[in-house]
Each structure stands twice: as structure tokens, then as C-alpha cells.
Image 1 (cartoon, rainbow, N blue to C red):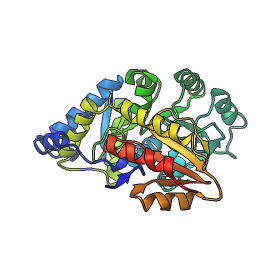
Image 2: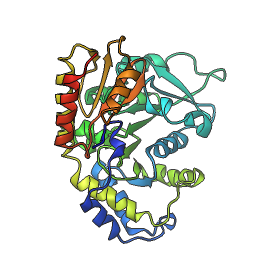
Image 3: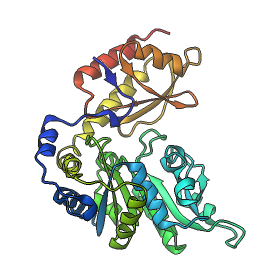
Image 4: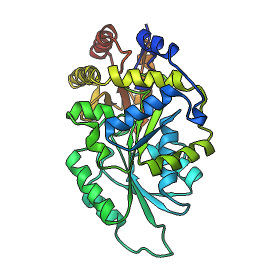
Length: 341
């Protein structure tokens, strides 16, 4: 038995999801003729109370499309130093859009309205990049699945409107935040110009993300997706998985969160763990004694068929997910308890 806790992207479609996928009516989505893709897009837009949506093969492409539609080459976007768009999207901000990043030194991937106000202050002339876009990530990946306070997001949104800045949400794990904070998608639809949501992480679909926005923004996004090579043909087979995930896999995210809490409780009792980041959703980030080291710990767990991932600076990440069973959970807890320095 392999216990894969590298990411929540490792899940495979359930039998019910596969059946729905194989029976999906399809057409050519490049010509907007795939009925299942259209259904998914309409469903997502309605869920968030936004005008339109567009299906993408990946969250990175959805984010990069949003950045390109909000900016011009030479502009500046503002995000946290831990942001996925800056750290883990291959330098796409610069490569695809010719945009530079102003990084805010936030807390676990989250910054405050006051920090944003300071970041956009100062000269605005031909010598410096123009600020065009503010980005946030919820939950924060590198921040250990942390959830933004909605009240702070409202303050940030107010600043963006007062300064004519666009506002984008990288919501790859947004549904984890919604479940953990008992919030509604429509709350977020009212704040942001564009939102990306991932279907292949906690929701368990095999492929796909969605970009939400106004009809004007999505019309531009369609053109940019084409430029990026993201046009798909009979994509309804994949979209059907997304529909199933939205209908069946949102509320169960609480189970992943509970398992993460239980893992954290065990880690807090063992002598070889030196620090655990606060656990809010399905991501656990912790540090082990330097005498062991992160790489050694990960390898020794791998030898026991338990797969973890390094996050740099001695950080180790565990991510719970749909395919992480109760049996696997008990094995992991036992191995953590019995790990010898």
C-alpha cells in the first residue's frame, strides 16, 4: 500500500465519476459546441454569482490568462512573497505577460490591507512600472493551507477600487477555505474581478480549472486561452468530472481537514518535530530536528511507502485528500508515533 500525501492532485476519479464521464454528451468546445463544458461553465458562474466562466486544462493556465487580460507588458502586479503565481508557475508572469511582481512580506501567504496600501504608495510616472493588478491566493499553498479572513479581503477590495486596480483570486483550494470558514462562493464573486478555481485538487477531478469573471473578461480570456494553446475539443468528458466534483465532493473536504488536525495532534507529541504551522484545512507543514533533516525524514518515510514532499527551508508538507483512506490514516499516525531518530 502506497500512502501518497505529496499533494491533493494525486487523486483518481471515483467509479461514479468515471461512469458520469464516459456517458457525457460532447461536442467541439473550441466552437463552444460541447454541451457538458457549457453546463460546467454555467454552473460555476451561477455558483459564484458571476457573469461567465471558462474551462481550462490547468490552474496555472487559468491564472496566467487572468494576469494577461488584466495587464499590459511593463506593468506590475502585487502579491504575497509566497504566492503560487510567483513561485510555482514557471516564471509565467514575466514570460507570458511581461509583468513584474511587487512582493509583500505577509504572514503565511497572507498580507493586510495596510501592507497593500503601503505597496502601492509612492511615485507613479514613466520611470516605474504601473500598478495594475492585485492577487491573493486562498487557501495559501506555501502558507500551509491558511485561510484569509473575509473581512480583510473586503478591506483590500476597497483599496483596489479606490486605486483603479484589478483584483484576482487564485482560488486553487478555495473550496477548502469555504468549508473551513463556513463561507459561500457568492461572497467571493462579489469581491473579485476574476477567480480561478481548481477541480483537480481537493475536489478530486482528474483535470481542469475554471476562470470566472465578467462576460467582457471571459471573452478576452477565450482569446488568450487560444494563444496559450489551451483550446480543447471534446472536453466534455473532463467537464463532466468537474460537474460531479462540484455536486459531490465539496462538503466531504471537512473529512480531509479533520484528518489533517489529527496528524497535527500526533506531530505535536513527538520529540523529533520542532515546529508545526497552524493547521486550518488539508495541508500540514512541519519541521523536524536538524539532526534528522527534512530530506532524511522524507526518505525514511518513503522507505515505509509513505510519500511526503519538501517545501524548502527545512519544511515538510503533508496533504490529505479524497484517496487518503481511514486505513492509510491509521498507518501514518502509527508510523509518526513510532519514528526513531
